Amino acid sequence: MRKAAIACTVVAALWCGQSAAQTTAYAPGHGSPNSIVLSVPVTASINNHCGFATAPSGTYNQPDFDAVGLLHDFDFVLDCTLPLRVGVVSSNGGLLANAGSLPAGYIAFAPYDITLNLVGDTTSVSATCAAATLTTGSTCTTFLGPATTTQGLRLDDSASQTSGSYLRVSAPPYPGPDVLVAATYNDTLVVTLSASP
Amino acid sequence: MRIGLLSGTVLAALAFAGVAAAQTTTGTVDVVGTVGEKCTVTGGDTSTTFSDTFDALELADTDGTLRAIAPFSTAGSSWRVHCTTIPDVSISATSMANVATAPSGYANTVNYIAYADFDVVTGPDETISTPSGGSSGPTTLGSHLQNVTDNVVIRADTFTTPNVGDILVSGSYAGLITVTITP
Image (cartoon, rainbow over all chains, first blue to last red; front, side, top):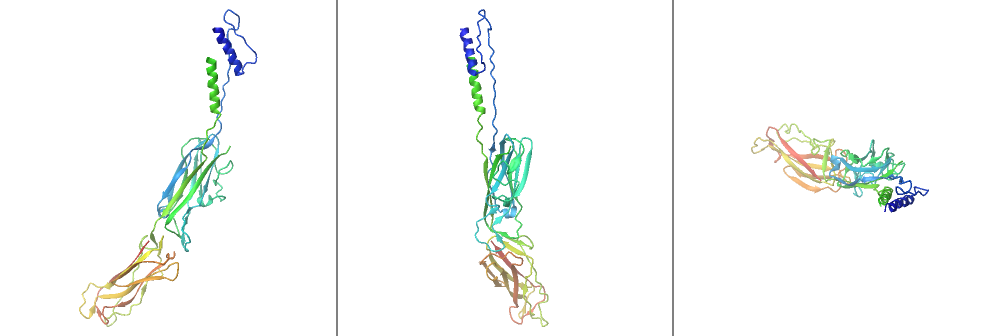
């Protein structure tokens, strides 16, 4: 029975590919060696990954924003094992209402600002652009999306699901001189993330 | 048997480590705001009120009857009324009245006609009016107010006593013109 067990051990070692030369172990009193030492290296790796653990989402609705302004944070969580970039694209470049043709002095478009704050494991970075500069192909060089390895606000850090990242929309009460007409205004922001080794 | 178990465990661990979980790289948020129907005032007394005072000074002529009083107007004021919609407007006016009693042949009231002119974006100014003691409106303007200073002008003219030749009793006379603009 013991011989059978030893023989099995040798077979296992060969199967693992760790021994090029055959070795024989003997039962005590029948020769030597009486045991065989097996060495099985164990290695593993974790692939780099980068994405939102929790992506920015949702709707912020502000009544009478012309009088009270805008202020809201869309929180999100980063999960990246290497530096990353985040970009933002605004569909309208501001808050826009479908109000048809308007007379001089009246307007159906309101500007606002977007602040992007990225929090990594050891560092953070923040920048602000006007929504008007975040339409496709526009001029916000800091974080106009879509994010690529070279475009977007760069966080030179890993982010192991750290909290504190947000996308903030803000605007003071509309200063005029044009009058915002009564309507519902909207904009959509698409936030993209890319690894940036 | 022991070696066999170990080998199986290692292979399983390696296989797990080699797979990166699929992750979200795009988020979408919507920003929505509304502008309610409202009217506000720039350059007025408050954000919703404006006023002016017309002092006709001495009302009586040398014979005690009402003298000829020039029309009164707020034209040139520094206020601007801005509404997020085409507004409704109305006007009311009270006669200039004196608390003193007026016997027959005398008067303690001066009547007039009050007007409000609205500078609108389409066409000429729109005007509503009423004799003092009455009111007019609400009336919806034909288009938005021009977004300019002095876009609402209040004025009065045609000052009269109840009967021609009435002698005005002495004292202070006061009336009020109220223009209401609602979104």
